[in-house]
Length: 284
Ligand code: SF4
Image 1 (cartoon, protein in one colour):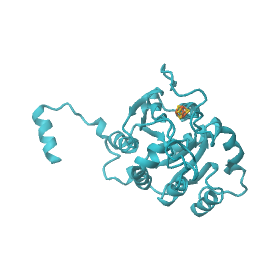
Image 2 (cartoon, rainbow, N blue to C red; image 1 turned 90 degrees about the horizontal axis):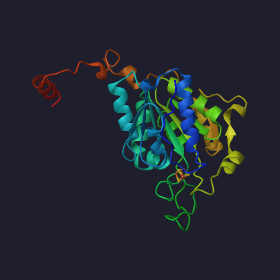
Image 3 (cartoon, rainbow, N blue to C red; image 1 turned 45 degrees about the vertical axis):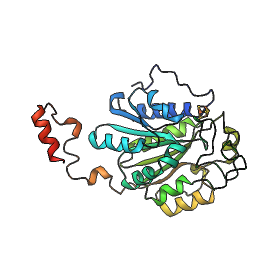
Image 4 (cartoon, helix red, strand yellow; image 1 turned 90 degrees about the vertical axis):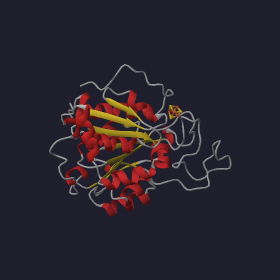
């Protein structure tokens, strides 16, 4: 199973997104799926290009809308493993409403956010994840608002799987994405993926100094939501590992009557024009 294709990514040399791409490819291979069993759906931004760089079905959607497309795909074809991906601007600004509702809906898809705390594609403006005081062309006096806290939002919205990785730790990140793909429900994985061109504050060195691995915290229990929330608040979100996983709650698919019986994608759609029009009428 080779999830590499011949397209050369046009990210800046050193961009964290290269490692995220490699981790997704490795995780998909490790869980034993074939390229035709994977769909990668992306939004807009530097990271959104990832859909074209993986040997799988790929869909490059519009800004902030990777999740609605990913959920539609999964509803139409439950046999596909669906990974949605994009940046922090895509998922936590224009796409934030979709993110929260996808989390609480708990559909069986994996969402990998490449969080570089800035808008890279548009050449360096403050994003919802930029720290308060962060200076860019759009906030020359420093960002006034505090940054959004995606782990706290995900936990509050009822997420059944929350993890966070760092792009240079490909081994851990691959394991997190594998666990996310195998999780029966919505898996939310935030990844610190530095923008080496426009974010000169949250650099690789900065993350290495500030991140704590949950595996190094004695008695950390990822099945305890309160402990997860308390830990991410205490550590100001600067942790990596599986933060929370609930293996009991059923996924959206398991709750939808009839969903498991036959995917829409497998229906015999060899219809005449009259049959097609009749079918359409049923939904009007
Ligand atoms: Fe990566 Fe930043 Fe370059 Fe975009 S601008 S490709 S996020 S380093």
